[in-house]
Every structure is written in C-alpha cells, then in structure tokens.
Image (cartoon, rainbow over all chains, first blue to last red; front, side, top):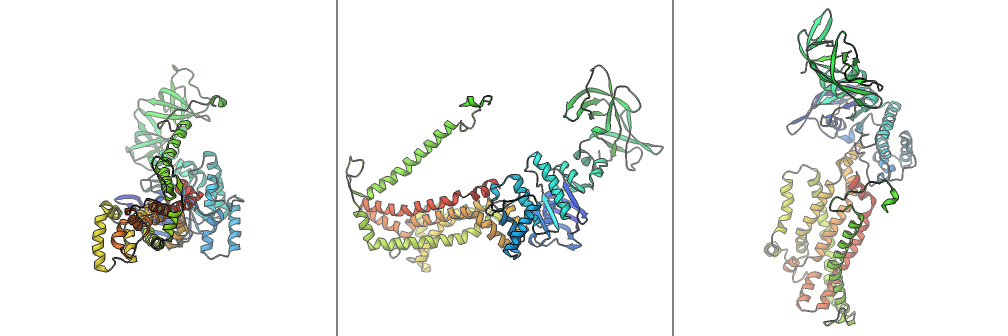
Length: 349
Length: 287
C-alpha cells in the first residue's frame, strides 16, 4: 500500500511547541502506535498526517511524494475519529456510501461495497439504522467501515476504543488488528493505553512533550527503555539515584551501600545516573547474601493474579517488588532482603 | 414502593430535591400552571373579546357571542391589503436575513474571525437604545436615499432586528456541531463547500428553522418602525392595529390580535416537529 515518512515536523499552538522535531518512517503494511499521556502531541501528529492541521515546519511524505500541502480530501489517508464523528442525519449506509457517491460511483455498486465492508467489520442488517440507534461498539465498527470503504493507503485511528467498556475494548483491539492484517493497510494508531499499543502495534512511538522519546517494537520499549520517561510510562519502574562503577567489563551502580549490576549502554565510570528497576526484576529472599539489601516496613498489596510488596531501604529509598499471589508476610519480626536481578542506568537525573 | 427492590440504598436528595420524582412532578405542574395563567388567560381573553357581542361588568364571559367583528375586519379592504403586505414582507425579510446570517453565523462559530466578540456585540447595538430614536434618525436617512415609504425601506428596517436573532442563534447552532463531523466529510473526499452543504447545514437545520421562525414573527409583529418609515403607503397589520386600537374599537383590535397570533401558533407547531426529530438529539447531545 504505502510508505509514510515524517521529516522534522514541528507544530506550534501560539508560542507552545506541541510537536517538536518529529521524524519517523513507516514501512508498507506497518502498524505504528503513537503512545503517550494526554497533551504529548500524538493527536496533533495524527491530524497533521490526515491533513487537518498544517505543520509549521517539516515535511510529510507518502511513497516519497510530499503531501504536506495537500488538503484532507485529496490525501490517500482515512481517519477514524475519537468520537466516531458519524453523521447523525444519515443512515449507516449513507454514512459509508458518502465518499463513494462523491466519487460518482453507481448506486448499485455503492450498495454492494457498503454491504461488503460491513461484513469485513462484522456488522450486518444495520444499513438503514441511524447512528443514534447503534451501540457504542457498533458505531465504532461503522466508523471503521466508513474509513475502510474508500480503500485508503493509510488508515489513521484517533483513540478509537476510548469510549468503549473494558471487555469490548479488548475484543475490538483484536478485531482492528485482524482487519489491518487482512487488508495489509499501513496504519497509525493514537492511544494513551500502553496495553493497546503493546498488543496491537508492530512498532510503538512513545511521545512526551511533543517529542518522540523512543520508537521500537513492544519488546524493545519494554525491555530496553532509553529514557526514564519510557521506563516509567511503559509498565512501571523503581528509580534510584546512583553512581556508575566499571570493572572487568561489568558495570555496577552504587546506591549508597548497595551495589548492583546494571545495563548502562556504554556510560563512563563514575557517571551519576538514574537506575530503573522493574518490580518483577527484584526478588525477595529471607537470608542475606551477595547483592542483597534489607527491606524495612514491608507491606503487601493484592492485585489478584499477583501481589506487590512495598518496602523501604535506608540507602535506596522506597520501592515495589512484584511477588507471587501466594506470598505472605509470615512474621513481621523475620527480616526480609531484596536483590535486584536486572537494572538499567540512564544519564537523566 | 421502595420495599420491592429490597436492599436498594436510600436515595440521597440533591440539587434542591430535584431528583425526587414527587418534587419534580410538582415543579413541572407549577411551571405548566404558570404558563397557562400568563399565556393562556390573556390569549383566551383576546379570543373572547373578538367574539363578544355584549360583555359588561360583572359577567365573567360575554353575554352574547357574534362573528360580526370578524366580518367587519375581513370585509375591510385596508385590512386585506395590510395582511397581504405583512405576509409578503415577512418571508422576504426572513429569506434575506437567512442569506446573511447563515454564512455570518458559520464564520463566527468556526473561522478565526478577528474581533469576533466585538462584531457580535455590534449586531446588538441597534437594540441597546430606545428604538424610536433609531427609527426617527433612520427615517431621516431614508428621506435622503429615497427609501422612505417604500417596500424595501420597510424590509431593511425589519432586518435590523432579525439579523440579531438569526446571527446569534445560528452562531450558537454551528458552534454546537462537532467540527470532527465536518472533518470526516473532508476526509471522505468532500470539498469544504460540499462538506458544509452535505453535513453541517442539515445538522444545523433545526436551529436555522427556529431562527427563521423568530425572524418571521418579529417581522410580522414590527409596528413602531414600520409606522415611521412605511406610512402612508406601506401599512402592515400591526400598524393598522395601532390605528384601530387608538379608535377604541376593542373587539376589532382583539380580532386583529387573534389573526396575528394564528400564524405564530401554526409556525410553532410546525417547528416542533423538526425540534423533536431524533437526529437533533444525536447531533446536539450525544455526538
């Protein structure tokens, strides 16, 4: 279908820079999620792709052709809006057929295509209904059908699942991914929900304050976050201030009296760093040993499938450990020790 | 009643007890009662007067009913002329107002019009001063440009008022329509103009109809200004009514009032149909 490229795109709202030098390239058929908290510039980026906002600097290319100045009606993109933006005065069939009729397609052919695309999105016998007569999930499917029926080269989705309840959200998530795979359509998907991004996308671009913090697949952004923001936003992390020490090819971080092995990606000896540790990369033991530190004020929070132990240590401060659902604090007198299995170091403080 | 559901928690009254069904019912009844007293009773009095053959104190209703006042009014050629004129001017005023107000309202709602607030207030200025002063100075102007005692002179005068209603209402209507609906049309391949006519205008129609209705009725009821700039050749129904009232023929004035009220009522009923159609709720409420 199409390759998409953004080159050094900037956008200001007044004096506020909401999109700051964004560049990325999407391969044909690729599914990219733009992930970030509200106000990070992800929706603005998507709207620039759709042609609804004009960038203040930079270029947008589709298959190598600059489309930066092309209005939305002449772009090869189709958008699914956050609140679906179905036209309330038109039936489902009229909503879907609108773009086809604009292209002067014959009435019978419009009806055929509409029925066909409704099958693709898993809806039947709703052609004559009005949007207000549909459930949220059905409206969502109609919005998707309306975007897909024109055979766009690039599909843009703006938080399409944010108005659905949790169960339906999971189902539609799989459904959208399936349709995207079936139609082999290049897709950009905006979300603030990391689970959606991790489960649906080929690659994820994590945005913060108008900048792309990191772009990579689910494993990369989870296992090898490149900034403290990513380490904190995807999953959760404990953060400690530390100093690096390199010896014999291994890198250690000293957090007060505790020293732990870290992945530091070539940072120099003696650098002051922030160390991030995932709650599942800590273990709790009952006897002191190499690399352990005493846990004070331990308490448990139950999450059903697992528990979290919240503890404190005079050197490293407060932290969280993920423990099994059967873990109990047997005796408050018995000392507990923590050991860090895996940690990453960042130069941000 | 509450026992049937068993373990339902006790409802907590809030917002002045408005959540309580009994309280709400009572308030609605009070409102309805108020409406009947303040709108219904004067209207009913008018109707009674227009049919009154003989009605002296202390009778509560006329002691004799007659249709001779209607006959007198409808047989008067001046009345027929005034009716024809009124019902010609009002549609023309409404149409011209719509032609200006719909684009203006859209521009105020959507486009980045500089000094938007100032311009919207500017529309209000003619209504901020005593009308009669405005009409007198307008009459002076009309003499100079030759609009005094002309059809278009009266039309333009009516539009001073109707432009305000219609521009304000259409601005609010267009602003209540989610811009994404328009963007979705652009996305599907419609030009900006096409998107406006296919999506925005139909959704805004109820608001536009209400605004047109106000304009129509305002034009139909305008008397002061028309009296100043339209006499002696352009006498509309309310102007004629003024002259009749001043000649103390109370039943005749009542007949006139009833005749002037009928189109208002008919138009309101017609508009109600539009206001209840389901896409209004969807377009203005949910989406």
